[in-house]
Image (cartoon, rainbow, N blue to C red; front, side, top):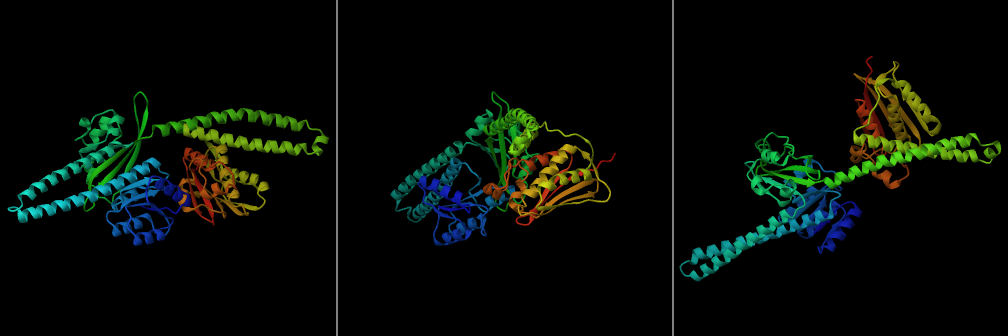
Amino acid sequence: MLLVDDEESVLLTLEAVLKKEGYEVTAVGSGTAALRAIREQRFDLLLSDLSIDEVDGLTLLAAAQKRDPETVSILLTGYASLESAVQALRYGAFNYLLKPCNIDEMKLTIARGLEKKRLAEALRERVADLEEANTTIRNFSAQLEDKVKVATSELAERVDELQESRGRLNAVIDSMKDGLVVYGADGAALLANTFMLSLFGTTAEKVLGCTAVQVADLTGEPPFEAATPELMLSAKGDEQLNEAAIFEIDGPRRRYVRRVVSPVIGAGSPLSGLVVVYQDVTDQKEVEQLKDDFLSIASHELKTPLTSIMGYTQLLNRRLNSELRRAGSDDVIEVIENQCRRMKRLVEDLLDVSRIERGSFQTAQAQVDLVDLVETVVKRFRPASRDHQLKVLKPEAGISVWGDEDRLDQVLTNLLSNAVKYSPDGGRVEVRLVRNGESAEVAVQDWGIGIPEDQQARIFSRFYQAEGVVRARRFGGMGLGLFISKAIVDELGGAISVDSTAGKGSTFCFTLPLYKG
């Protein structure tokens, strides 16, 4: 087995797991080394990351199959897309797993792949034996009746073996922890595994032969994006057909199911069928709900003692005599107040996250002088950011927007705080205000460390921080500021985006509707 991944920790972990399972593993950390290994020897299975260095997983897949068409290929990726999944299957990948993947699922997929290879080789050998036997029978039928009987007996044994192999394949499908329905070219269901039938409380007799629309009516799932299976099956393979949806199933325990629809590509790239996978994500949803509940409860429980500490600290500060102040007690109290304010901000952020997740996050609607607000926020930052040159570029005419002044102050504070924080060597930070049609546009630009392109899509996610920031831990923070800022801007009817280059800085831009009086 050839194992390829450019992340050393992932490579070592997977190598250890697979060797423990008894596999003979050749592990390499680059695409170049993998190509060299493929040229030097044949492998039963290729397990590779889709995105590695200069040689991607699809190139390795093609090279492995060129060397040995029977090589089973499984691709791993942490940035899955519909296009990459379709392309991987078109190139001949046996399966396509998302990182981080479940170890048991990965081991099961590898076992299925090797079993498929073994069965294919066995079938090819049996067919060759049968053809040889038939040729012998045709040439010597008159003289070799006994051999005909022997060959017939052998043929029966081969059929039994094939039936046994098919039974093993069905057993593997039925042992899957995901539901599976396979539709043929005519749109009728050909196969439904045990997990799917159990999940929806139905039987094979009710499912098999039905169209996807009829199965959806039976299970209560939402219909596919295409109106009928025939429309889906008439599409071409280069059209992105895969779709995923999460829906609920009523019952004694409410369950959440994730459905993934994938095409089966036939000769000439038309779709010859559909594969629908149902994943029970109830436990994952419940864990997320528990996490949200914990955030809400913890935030509220922390807020009350923090308020008391702040109040008593301010009272103590007012009662300090001159002697204690000279001894430095007021500095200690100032540290306590600053840390309490910092903790209070974190608690407020957690409360905002809880409100956003529960759908109870609200903003006020009023006229806001955006120019005055920006200048106020920048002025507040200047004393604490002496190594940075904070500049405001604004039009001569004022700009008023329809929004919530306190929440917009929060957005600007988050963006400026990030611009200063991620420009550790100081330098220029600009805030630009312009009119853009019916909207006002605010851009906060720094020339700091920037954000890698492959991480920009997730930068507005909850608790997300760039990988380099997480490893360094030099900047702190919980990864909530941009998540909350996006929720505020979205709630006010605007949009927020980022344009960044690693090592050259970032520009965060958001738009808001103008106030029309």
